[in-house]
Length: 283
Image (cartoon, rainbow, N blue to C red; front, side):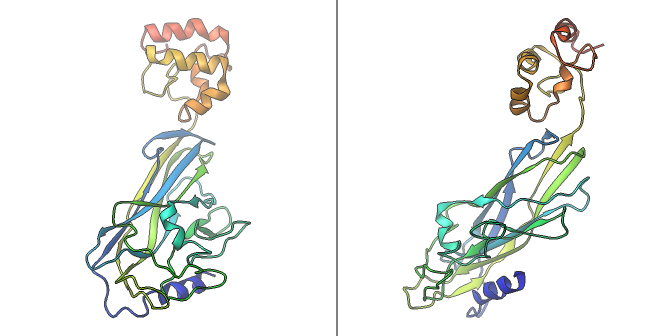
């Protein structure tokens, strides 16, 4: 399927005589980037695309990129497909646009398809392209009307998704790779072909999150790296509602509330926790 998709995508640039002067940049972001999360916590990610240099371009015609795991990650996992991004990219997604078919019950491969060894699958060919051929397709490319100016007003969300942080502690990096982009030379009215050119792509972005294992500092319930009055509210939450504490403080470990080292978090930890706060640390 990958080779089939690549043949289709190559067709987007079949009529271009020279490469476009346009530059297309892919980026990945996450609220968990640069933070520590607990094993099993949710890590959200978003991939965006924009024309950072639109010289000679009438907007994006095609935007495809892979999301891959770093070979040095402590543990591998199967990256789950994401969700469709900005509505302005509807014309890049099947059935209106041209993208991989969906797998595993998904209606489209625009959200990424899993490839690789089981237990270590990356997301391949996230995204798709507009139908620039001037003729409507039947299964995909049903919209022969080309949208101009896409990606020229700032980043556009391609796909967003989430994954579950692995059980093994350490630093995990997800990177973008194998980007492919074409830009429109002009926007023509069907049945005329809208010519495109291959753009220079930049896809060097990555995110890194750390999976923490166990309690790093007793009494530090807000994971600030110290013990102070700001830990009181999260301590009370950990004591009364540990499930909600895990949601509100995903990078922290509830066992940090076991300040009397009894092996559990209960009312008997209150006095020792107060002592930790007053002494700016537990004995």
